[in-house]
Length: 246
Image 1 (cartoon, rainbow, N blue to C red):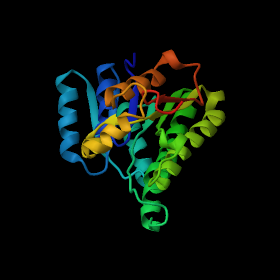
Image 2 (image 1 turned 90 degrees about the vertical axis):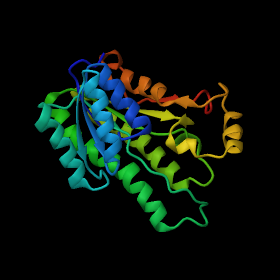
Image 3 (image 1 turned 120 degrees about the vertical axis):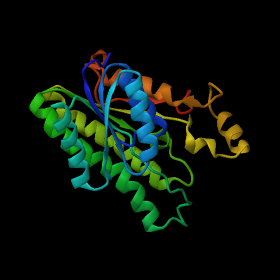
Image 4 (image 1 turned 180 degrees about the vertical axis):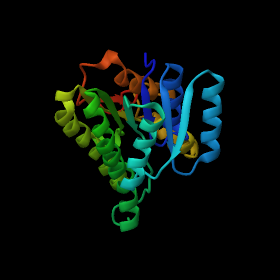
């Protein structure tokens, strides 16, 4: 499905990003795994991809800094000669009620989730425009569509990556480049594992399918949008949320 494609996946050390990297490698892509801190998890991921016969390299970069985002894209092209897919997955949370949220809590989330996505899109698109082909997938969230108490910074950032996907889709379509977004709901990851049981029960009650999703189910949607099967899809948001927001 992705045989021979070169893909950069930001924030791929764990959770959804890790699942996307694994699935891309299994489908034949040459994967550039970006991470900021999680070196041990990344080394284990590279070993897993290698054992399975896939190709991958790791590039450490803080995508909230433009020079590092540029370096990340440059390393991918230097290693593999082209760039076919960019998945903007890097993201953090700093939850707090709006009246208590600090400027640092607000800025740090927007710097990584929103500006980081912009910087990577900017520098990846320069390569893709020359190739006259490419696919960009932004990982958003259902809270970017519906909002969530205590997450005004995260909601703003995730709504923003949807807006950027739609704007970039219009800018780049004439060169054969598609840009879409995937909005996960509650997914089983390290982050949700730490939630109290009562909170998990309460959130499951709001999901029509009555369960959390799996990271692999998000990766399925991303893999589809990154493949030639989605060549006529651009500017869209696919929700992987068990029907939570509809």
